[in-house]
Image 1 (cartoon, rainbow, N blue to C red):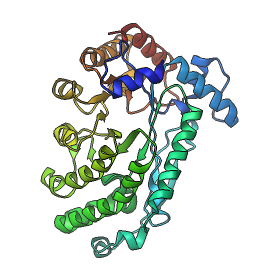
Image 2 (tube, one colour; image 1 turned 180 degrees about the vertical axis):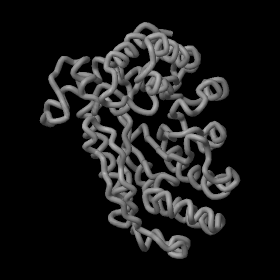
Image 3 (cartoon, rainbow, N blue to C red; image 1 turned 90 degrees about the vertical axis):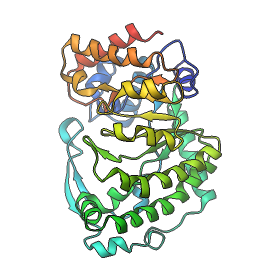
Image 4 (cartoon, one colour; image 1 turned 60 degrees about the horizontal axis):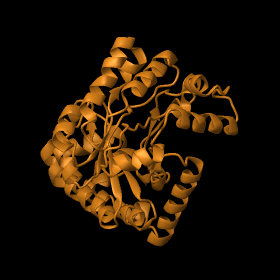
Length: 352
């Protein structure tokens, strides 16, 4: 039933139940144990973890599995390492290794993406994308699976340059940095074309274009150097009949209309972006996923949690493509009772 609910939402068919997706529950071992009864922790073997994860997905009726197959690995060694804060239980994912791939601004302005990162064979890449997608469908058959591109534009440039050089290059000469950004979009287009040729029906396109406070470069710069080219790349997917789900973290209230103009079928976002505006303006024409505040679910009282889920449901239920999710993630190691109560409230309020 989860798959059917998810596809109905993607297709704006107003299912009787508001479907849901969640993120990073795969790492929340205490929650997995509490929900499934399977004894699992960070040191468990892969089979135990997989069994707990899939049992959780069935128990919580997860209708969509967020995934992109094309990420920072396409840059090889020519990318910046910025380190990584600890997120997993025990902070085993903490990385203190930092390395800048580029330290000269002129080199950045003159970068030839094809020379540096190469070209792909569209047919073989499309085949690889399809194979990865079908494998995920076999592993997680109960919901809508996706594949897509994580490094669409700003997120790709960030992986290459890191924040220090990105902001330095943008501030030193916004026009030349804009031309660099356009060349990136033109280079990454080959991956969009390969995705368009694949057998993936629902594509996940990700780009963190903003900070929590909104755009970090003047909006006019995005209008000139980012949106027209991302829209062009998305058009390859639309022309191939794909559904395009678009994810952007941070606060993108200023860009909501621009994102919809890019031709996307779904907006996925954090509580930093206004759910009310999106539901009222685009609730009948695009799918919407979000945006229960993870801070409230993690640390709030039962009343706070109820009110937060109710806020999302009251806004989302009139929208045929609405899907509930905690934004940004279910955080490992936090109050399991709060998550269980969150699910209890969802079960109580999920019917339209």
